[in-house]
Length: 535
Ligand code: AMP
Image (tube, rainbow, N blue to C red; front, side):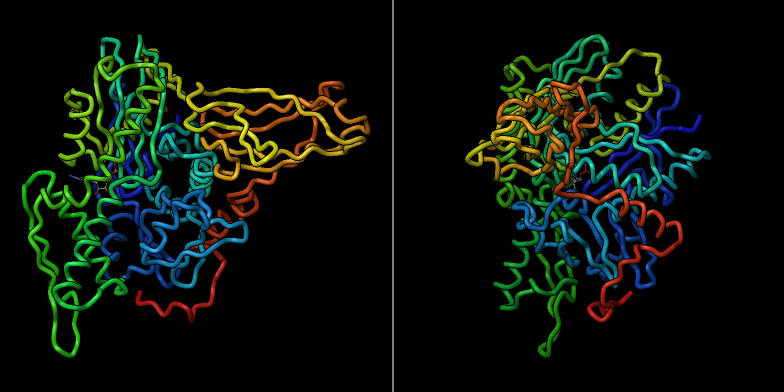
């Protein structure tokens, strides 16, 4: 049997694992590292570099080195969250016809799914080399708070990479599987997962091998990247104050500062102070200027304390939604690299009055959990483990006056199906239009539009007579499905779904073909003269 691997496709780093002799084992990548930077450099030739090789290009070739692409997956260019982060990227972002994000590098236009596919393909290749077997199937993790578009985009990326996704699981839930595998006793725990781009908090009950998620909460735009940006802004301001020169428009300098910021931030998790030293960051007729500063942990905490503070209400809400009190929790599991920051740990400890559990490797535990899930699905694990997860976001429809009517409320255990009857309001009405949304606002327009669909071919009848049952479903991957049935005839009613985001099956096919024919990264060239780039 071909091995099934678990993949944590992270914002800054990705990791893969496999179950060997009943225990998860991290798969080293082709460069020998346990984690792979989620970074891709597009070369002028159309070839690309992935991981550490790409990371090394980030400073010299910032316009063509794509990082933190996970924040762009399944997103519209116009989305509110993107407004804050889009201008931070040194590479060009534009808009697809359907409003989705398009990345431009060298003379190519690519979707975030294609960039993620390069990372996944590299992971697939690494796993095949390590396991000496073809790898086709995978479990892929996503932040619990990913909506349907983001999940679908992740699945599409895997498909482009030649992987068959057996299941999409939530990152904190995966972490809890790795934690619970070894545990003999029952426990109620919180998973606080702050990675490079996202925050997820999940409350679970683990009882005789049943992992029951009680509630989840989080923010898909709160993570380590935001901490780095705070440091970058501080250093840019300091440099400009001291030298009267702004480096903001200098992509190369900003990228150097960003790299140094992340390094310093990590260092300050273990030391009280560190030096940032960037020689020749700027040159003009008066000579060269250097950026050299001493950064203390205290200063870093001052610059980022509001980000940590912002995460606590999510923890609070998840606990109250689970019906538990903080004192009911047996353990708080820390996941994601950013939880190494002492301020994060201190804030959680102070809020819950309990020492967080840092016994798991926060970089590898999610992939390890995904590998365990692969063994559950394939039946190759002797221990009985059952996973009951929830939907993080309410699913509903738009009704009159821009109102959002919830059909499946958040924190409902998945998979789930809910039926809702619809009828007509006009005489001999031939179609009924339904707008499916996901989110928590009572205002329809504030939520994410998943799809609009028409129930068509209704028999001509007086208003209010037809009864069509529409079933809204969320599968175990957290992906939404909609079906309709004419109650009177029992016939399946046609549903014309127009997804408001994502790649069409034809586009996915075209991308796969172009990869097979080595027309990387896609055949969708833009004017080369826009990018007279260096590589
Ligand atoms: P992950 O997505 O779990 O790989 O988390 C990556 C994020 O964790 C990045 O923003 C890293 O900068 C951050 N990170 C990794 N190690 C540390 C550390 N020692 N201290 C603070 N943040 C860290």
